Every structure is written in C-alpha cells, then in structure tokens.
Figure 1: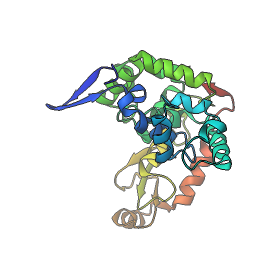
Figure 2 (figure 1 turned 60 degrees about the horizontal axis):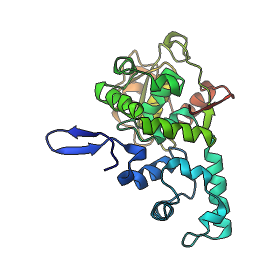
Figure 3 (figure 1 turned 30 degrees about the horizontal axis):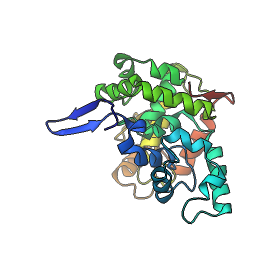
Figure 4 (figure 1 turned 45 degrees about the vertical axis):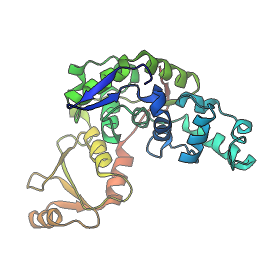
Length: 271
C-alpha cells in the first residue's frame, strides 16, 4: 500500500484512498489523467504509460509535464518525430478547463457530469478544496457519499502537494463566473433528451444544460419546453409530437450550448 487511508466498501472490499499518489494505482491514474475526456494527451497510450512508470520516469501525473523528447526516445519504438509530437501534445494539455481537470483527478465517483456540476457551482478549485460535506451536497447530483469522497481527496496532504506541482508546471484553465440560478439563460425551461447522442454523452449533455439553468426531465409533458431527439428516439419523440412540444436534433443542442457557454479568458492555475 502507499500509506494512505483505506476505505471499506460493504462487508468485504477494502479500497485505497490514495488515488493519484498511490503507487499501486499509478499506471491507471496516469492513463485516466491523460484520457480524451480528461486532459486529452494525444499519444499517451497504455504502452507508453507502462514504459514510463516501469522505467521510473514518471512517478505521478505532474512528472508528465517535465518529460523531454530525448527522454521519451529511450522508450521502445519511440522515434524522434513521435517523441516530439508527444511532448507537444503534453504541452497543449496544460491549458484545459476546470471540469476536465476535476475529472482528470480521478476522485471516486466524480465522473464528467459531476465534475462539470462542481466546476460551475464553485467556479474555483480552492473553494472546492475547502468545501464541507454539507456544502457539497447542495450541488446537483452530489450526494453524501460522493461528498465524502471529495472531502477525503482534498484532506490528503499528498494530493494538495500534487496540485501545487501541477500548477508550478503550467496546468491552468479559464476562470468560471458563477451566477445565481435565476439569472442563468435556461432558467425555467424543462428539457428532455431522447435517442442516441453522437458528439457527447447523455450525462455530459444533462450536466451542461443544468449548468445553464435548465431542468432535465426523464419524461415528456405539457410543461416540457423542448425535446432534443437523436437516432433511435421512440416513445418520448412520439409524445412530444402528440403534445406539440418543440423537437430539435443534436446539432441544435450543440449550437445552443456553444452559444450560451461563456468563460473568461483569464487563466486560472491549480493552487
């Protein structure tokens, strides 16, 4: 074990709470951190991660940001161009968003949708770090168990030290302006999503709509404002047509999100 506290699940399973700084979980945490929906480090595949960790070139995710092409060229099947391309990809990943960064941290049960909710609710990583369980459960989709996981993560000094190293190595994101629910652009609107979405996950779409003030419902009624329907839409689409509720496709949803989601250009670094 890495020396971190362990968490008991049920009557049998014992899980280490070390996460990003747990040696036993190191490879998986780096793979997750670099994945497409996290910091999106193109070229940082499973084989590369295995070699970096086995060669002790990377001990935690902050070490990724000091890798040089000459070091990467020592890896199996890594030529000059591939090494330079990976270094450039790592450099680009320094500029991310707070939701992606929170998801990348791998906090237990904090997926993409929850990370987005947390980012939009607090707007600042430091405020999230200092949040209590009581404060966290006020965030949509965050229950007591998830709140405990978040508090436990930020109570770990090693995790805080890691955040500091990431900031020192240039990881940053645009600041988020937190607004009251009543002033959000989709306040008072009820949205239903049905069918298959091809460009984003259902959970991400739901979280982004909620962040803009909408209520995302599971069924269509007279109070529904709009139904976004993808391929395979069935009874909900039929119900919307019957009730005369507006129906739009995924392209319209993406256009709406792009038009309404605005952030400041000022960079915000991990504390």
